[in-house]
Each structure stands twice: as C-alpha cells, then as structure tokens.
Length: 140
Image (cartoon, rainbow, N blue to C red; front, side, top):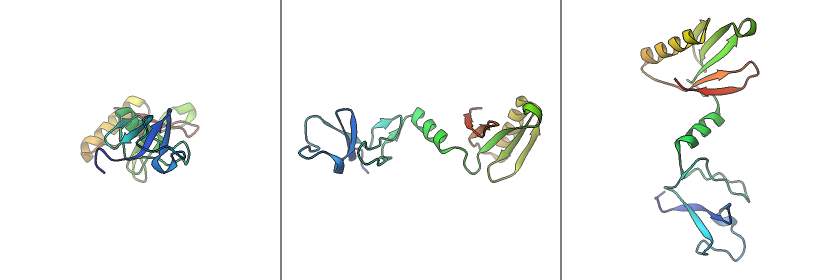
C-alpha cells in the first residue's frame, strides 16, 4: 500500500469504509477526509457501520503500546505472578517456556529478568499478572 492509498474515510467524525459510505456520498465529497496509509493513529480506525478494523495505518508509540496491552502476554514474553502467602514471593516465567525462578522481592525479580536479557541477548515484554489474572505491561 502506498502512502496516498486509503480504504476508509472520516465523515462528520464518523469512520467509514469506502464501501460503507451513505448513498449519494462519494470519496470526492467536500466533507469526506481520507484516512491515508501514512497517517498515524493512537488506535487502528474501525468502521462505525460494519466494524472492519483498518490496520493499514501507522500507530503512534501510544498506539503500539495499546495494541500490545490488548494482545496480552505472548509466547516468549516474561510473566511475573504472586506466589505464596499474600504475595510473599514472585514466580517469574517465560510464556510457553522455562521458569526464571521464585524470588522474595521485586528487586530480585528485576535482577533475574535483566540477567536473562543479557544472557539470552534479547528482550521481551514483561507482564505482571495479578492474583485476579489481570495483566499489566511493565517497563524496565
């Protein structure tokens, strides 16, 4: 897709696919604004009529973080979960992979994760899993 291509437009603060435009309205109408492929959005535009997700646009840093958080932990990401009485310990594990151990404090958890990153020469998303199963993206 080229920068000047588009599959959706904004009309009266409403996002619509080109195919979902109302009768008598065209992409050349004065009140229709194309959503160009090189535009940046905080979230992918979704057609208000048919619900199609237009993921051809670029995302801002906030948008990329939002998409990552919506997807949740993925294979090779690291998850930290509470373990023991009232979260007295933390279990650190790679999703679909090995355990990085059980640690007594978050500072020990951080050291274990940073050590893993250095040893494996990679970095992954790190998630905290609450005792209710909710996930939060962490930054190191």
